[in-house]
Length: 127
Image 1 (cartoon, helix red, strand yellow):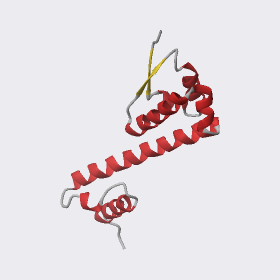
Image 2 (cartoon, one colour; image 1 turned 180 degrees about the horizontal axis):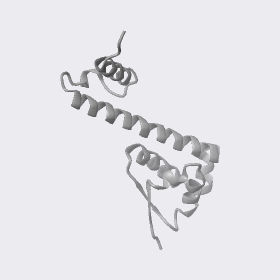
Image 3 (spheres, one colour; image 1 turned 90 degrees about the horizontal axis):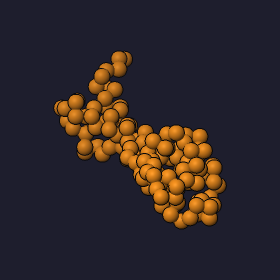
């Protein structure tokens, strides 16, 4: 029995739909280009979600609890970390002040993927 391109397409789209990455109703009929764009976008989004999860895992491995972050860096640091998590998910960035957020930035840089997380932070000089 051979495995066709159509079989591959159907399997990939079914897998993406079963995982919740796309809705079955969103799969265009008779437009492989649009369907491929939909699949690629879903895969990229899934990758971003995986990165987001890795950020939280690395952070909690480093600090043990979010309460520890609040105690050491203030409650605003928790908001910053959640905004950073969203920036990782959405491939955007957040702004940090070099002086005010220095301790929090040092914490993020210490994480195993700190270089990756820092790509989502714009550090601005502060007085």
